[in-house]
Length: 382
Image (cartoon, rainbow, N blue to C red; front, side, top):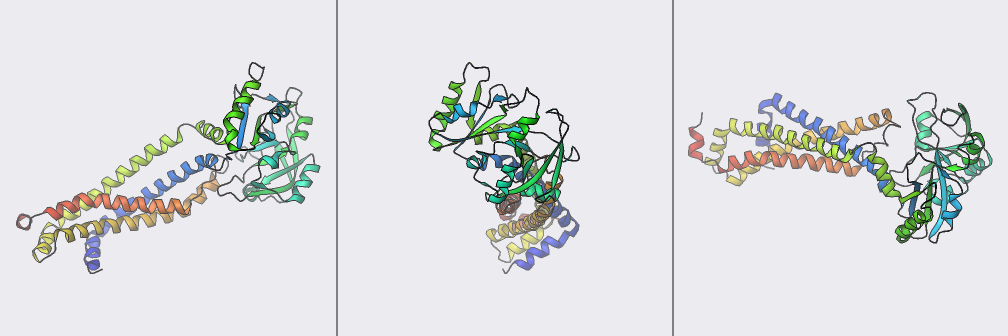
């Protein structure tokens, strides 16, 4: 590129200003990327939800329990292939900060409903035979350095007995990108034997797998009608709708992220645009000379845009590099409080495109001003 030397000479004319602008750009890109990753994390439950699965909860709320006998009645509805039920356990491992989701599962039907959670057959069979057995996700096991055969104590005040101990019989993983590998499972039968009588023979919620996703609306309506006017009326919805509703309990995360993202966008646009406007104004005479010796208006516009794009590219790459190093550390620190934060190649690409767009937009108005500048008038400026 024949104007490369000219572009870089202009960029490094004010080194301190260049460093501040690139630094501002980088920090803004880190924030932009982090917001995008958080938004993706909260939406991941919706994205990986099975299209052929429905969730049945008590109409009053998720914490209201339902009779375990509902399972057979739901299974009898045409279009239902498999039914399983879960309970929330809510134990504490060593310290209250060590939060992770713990589910009491129905071992007879869980694998049929959730085929994406892969457990080696030998480990699963050991788990089924062991009333005090448990299974942990691969990410969870790595977090606490667990291995098969470990004895894992949990404390809970929810279900009476304060101390529970489990044998880690297996570790599951999932081949789905962004799949949840942070769960902890224990057996419903052992749970049911140990909890107070008021909790016995209950289920927290039901998960059912359909013969076809096309049956979702009909089956959901049939289930709710079946238990209408009973002591435990139900609310049935698709797994994606359930995940979206659960995420909304944290507040309107998407609106918050979009608002902060908009502030970042306009702030970055103003900072970079102001830098380019000052840079063009400082070089008014030089640009006039370049025009006088034959550079076209389009070439002058190109020079200004190229400078702005180089600043945005360097700042964007630096910001994405910082995000690439920082986000895994933040995710590890927030494990259990937020879904895993994953910085994908798509997010990196979008971040770089965002940086280049800001660069082009910031340099456009100063570039047009330089392009329209008349040589005679420009030479008169001091």
